[in-house]
Amino acid sequence: MRTIDESNARAKEMCAGGYRYLYGGKGQDYTTALVEQLHKLYPSCVPLEEALKDADKGYKAIDCSGLVCDVLGISNMGSAQLRSTAVKRLSVSKANAQPGMVLWRSGHVAYVGEDLKIYEAAGTKTDMRVSTFDSRAGAFTELLVVKGSALAAGETSAKKANPYTEPTRVIQYKKIGMMKGDDVCWVQFELQEAGYDIEIDGKFGPASDKALRAFQASCKITVDGKCGPATRKYLKAN
Image 1 (cartoon, rainbow, N blue to C red):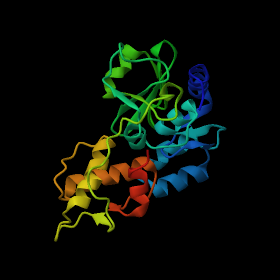
Image 2: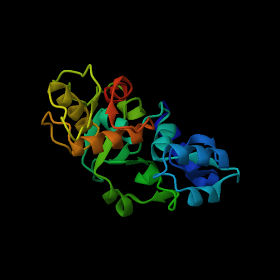
Image 3: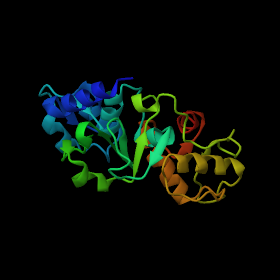
């Protein structure tokens, strides 16, 4: 964990020119080999031709959650996990914002630094971005106090206890014989806590499948739409 002053300084450093956005980047050397590896894993998120433009030029690779976790000095988590494990979730406003917080929307996060400037690894084309709060905060839906950060000291998780039964089977979408039950509700509840707008109805349909795949992509784990032991571990992290 970094102090808020340390986090503010680290955010400035990371957005000063030595880092470039790359989906799946967590501070590795930005090389052709890394781009090709991440493109193979996440072809829709790592456009090969565009991503290769910054390869082998001495940069470090970082994505939005990688930047936030590095700045805060916490273990790497995806944007969905940062939301589900947050100790506070607040509406986006200057009155609620303070340095050390994280701005969140589904699939993307940014750091709130000194003078409420927003630091983010914004995307392959946009790259690293520093913005004023007034000009950029409206693109996000929540302010988070992230577990393990300096602001979270002494706070307990905002995550609700899951009232449903954790699955012992693999939950996945099936066009024929749709999976139903209390254990499906467990998965849907955890996806809601991670910020996905789905209904808890005990039926694992297309909307639940889409949310689960988005969660897996956020966590940089295998995106297969199957909620087995590995995915459940990430869903219930707290």
